[in-house]
Length: 478
Image (tube, rainbow, N blue to C red; front, side):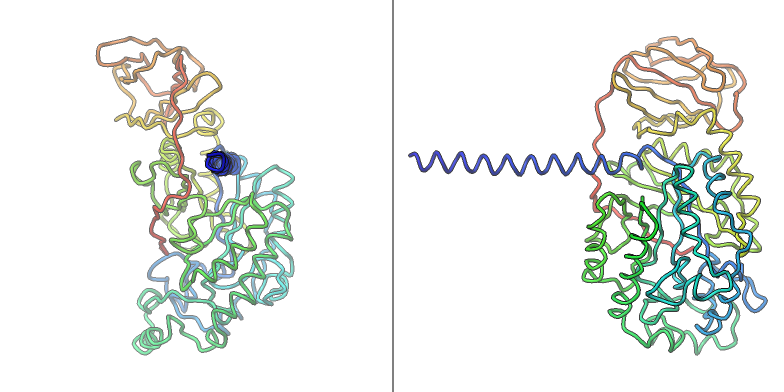
């Protein structure tokens, strides 16, 4: 009987340890994600030698997709693309200007393409001479300058790294695209047949090594360089895991395990490496599609990730601000992309819109930062939730302002006060059998979105986040 009792006690102790470990893991994950969940708004930067071409090859505008895909879609030979790259000389690049613009827009972190699919490293690398220091006339490490500017201005810095696709370093994988997506090459039929027979490759130079060799000699060593050479890394943003295997992903994950504070997206290798957050691309997902998960929408201000010289589809500031509001109301982050010119300047249409977003954020930023999904979906706009120590605040972001001065809202909780953020004016509330009516001015104080701060007398029940959800979103190459 004593042996049985000892066994039961021992078993209980083991279960207790497991429970403590599980709780610690949850707490650690919440702590890790805390700054990211509070930030809500970040700058994505797609920049590389593809900006020299600006989406134009042999006098033809690229037929489909972002300008950063021009080497693949136009099937530019490796030697020719490398010759173009040698002229990359961004003499107008100023890291401080970029970081200050991000801060002015109200952004809290920056994620930059350290190596996109064209294989060019925007940093000094011993793993491949195809980098901005060793291969170009510019001969300076732009990541080093950006990292210093971010530290100076207390901006979190993350790195995008194409871990699998690489069209210049031999052995890197290639997503096959048809010639018609690039330019009207008279040799299109032969090229399409070649890429079909060769896993998407269009140049024999791309196949002089295996992908195993590429992962071991380029991908993993460059990731090590990024992790060790630039101070604290906040985010690693993987992309298009073409031909990635679990074994390849394990090698990369082994390096990342040394830096448990780094937040990763879910694109290293699906489905077995879910990362810390989901990545819907170019759109705001439906609320039910991101229920209970951390997520981030990445989106262009224009139509291309990389600089496109003939860009004419810039999103209006109203659309961008309302996207940010809706994303915050559904518990996500907004990673908004700019594509600098080959000289290193952010295009003026992007600058103008970011500054205008910053003006809106100066007044209404408290309705975005440190908030969470509300699970309340009014017809006139969005509702964003923020929990304080003792109570909850709801931010009513009104897109369709009531011309009669009566805003209808329904919630079971008792309301302490209602305030218009634009001018801090206290608003009167009328209780009805169907909810409440908030008396507002007949004209919206803000043409984009006016925000009413609704302070409740209670703290609502917490919402659970399941960060390792198997839910994934399509990776686009638009």
